[in-house]
Amino acid sequence: MNTFNINRRSFLHGATAALALSTFGAQGMDLINPAKTWRVGLIGTGWYGKSDLFRLIQVAPVEVIALCDVDKNQLNEAGNLVSQRQKSGKTPKLYGDYQKMLAENEMDIVLIGSPDHWHALQMIDAVKAGAHVYVQKPISVDVLEGEAMVAAARKYKKVVQVGTQRKSTPHLIDAKKNIVDAGLLGKISHVEMCCYYHMRANGNPPVEAVPDYLDYEKWTGPAPLRPYDGSPHVRWWRTFMEYGNGITGDMCVHMFDTVRWMLKLGWPKKITSTGGIYVQKEGKSNISDTQSAIFEYDGLNCVWQHRTWGTPNNPDYPWSFTLYGEKGTLWASTMAYDFIPQGKGEKIHKDVVYEKEKYPEDLKEDKIELNAAPATRLHMLDFLAAIENNGRPVADIEEGHISTASCILANLSMKTGRSIVYDPIKREIVGDREANALLARAYRAPYKHPDYKHV
Image (cartoon, rainbow, N blue to C red):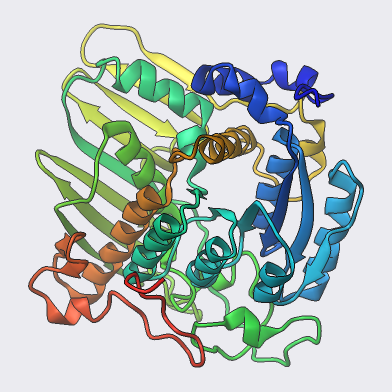
């Protein structure tokens, strides 16, 4: 079979292609159209689950054989859209129970786009079923879930890529190579990261009957069962700590993960965070509207700040990170980067890469993040390369765990009012019995919290 099929012509002209070729060499072309067709399943067919799946369909020959969602309306819509997108034109088998989907189908790849509180159980079950996994960030809602996910990936020898696609964002790859690695910043001794988006849902909707198309019991899964007060999809579930880790867990994880990648940083030595609900007190939301966190390294602090009210400190970079070096400063976000040298020197600016002409279907996709599409396509290619080479992807589950757990530990610091020192070897918080008890959340019966010793 000729590995260069009809998609090759359009692939060769895209930014994704150029980066794939520079990253993977000649294998980049083989990745885009390998001799095999990947058998794929998706758990969680909401906004980003579908977005990830459609990016994979764009860059590799796949047969989406199964979809799973506890919302029948969302599931049926996704099935129809996939039949229009995939080459075979077939509608995947549709499931309301992901374990049944895993049991009845042999899949090469499972994508997980469910809410955060489901990531751990679904990822672990998927690798046990023999699939490689692409799981959205943050990978977990507590630290020991993450430890179990890393252990499962290693035990079952599966590639697990985390959806921290900033590492595959063309202009940020350029910034790492041509600004950071090239030494234009000199010694970097301070990092600031922020999010000032007004993204905290904060209403007071009334409790109502659960609609017949939604299995709310199964949607809730191991999390506490909140009274149903409207559709939890997209923004509403993120406003509750029952299902995630607030804006630090949702948005800091991207920026911190990117900074760690650029600067080759591992676990922080100490994490300190303060914050709370300072302004937006009128609604049901229980995530912080204001929070600061310091992730300490030797000779370097990475400082996070979010506010869901007021204005950003730099309107051009409302969700971003800034690297401060002795020779200059680098501002960077999902949309652009700006290098500002100390004293005389040339400023360097780069914008996000779009591929609207090469992938016109992007323009018709509901809620698509056009700026993230090229990054996700390259992220998928990196994922496939790791599978083919039996290697580790750029956003390997262990790296995703460090970034996720660090954000979770920041929240624990804010909750306890104390700094946190986590020992990743012993998997415990040093000298703090109360904080240690918070490393694993209680699961709602009959669900069992995963144990890294027995996955």
